[in-house]
Image (cartoon, rainbow, N blue to C red):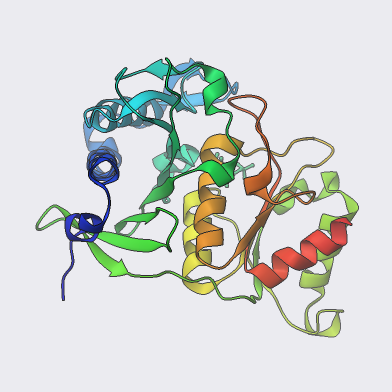
Length: 317
Ligand code: P6P
């Protein structure tokens, strides 16, 4: 039976239903913008940088504007924050929620036709006008999280705290349709994802873990492992949700806090992964327990199949 997103959202309170419906619409528009980039001359660099000091793609800015406008139209967000914006944006003073997002994660892939995604997190807003400090909530306080994946198909994966649901965009009817109900991560895996070009910077626990995986059957794990690296977190997390795996972007001697941003990459993905029966850690603590201190702070990430994350945590003890 074909179940559209709108039907699945009927069990949600009206404000949550409207927020997720508007975010889904934003993701449809971003999907079209990504698919048509080469045809509409919107590939390539924008000639500007973000607060992270990263070169912005034209589509980073286009996707950011789409999310701000389409999600903002639901009227429930008091303020928003984005990877592409230096500071927060005030929205509806009557809004009771905050939205924080990465509008086009992995955008360095967009010009070479490799999957990219949008990642979002919904938090409760304060009674008074939000300030940046109101966004600095631990990941456990998220009330919803999700990502869109613009790949061979466009998918939307969301959680509101009671499991993880996956929807595929049916372009013939313009609806996201439930195709992956109750996504669950296998507890064990023989597949890891890490940018191995950073191996000379790795700390001992990470080097030990990867060396043991690469040693294969004759090594201490007694199994052969496979490696993947897409350089697009949404694609890596999606693969792990479907078939298991572990994704690592650790801190190292070159990146003392890792690379990924806590509020709009690590936290939403950690909520999804935990809701799907997996785990997410910085190596020192569970991702969702980290108390943020800055809007764009970075955090080490190791997430996925819970028995592998548990092993990584043991190696960090
Ligand atoms: P590297 C994309 O820029 C991103 O934030 C994640 O989506 C991805 O997992 C990671 O960085 C890729 O980093 O160092 O391999 O380019």
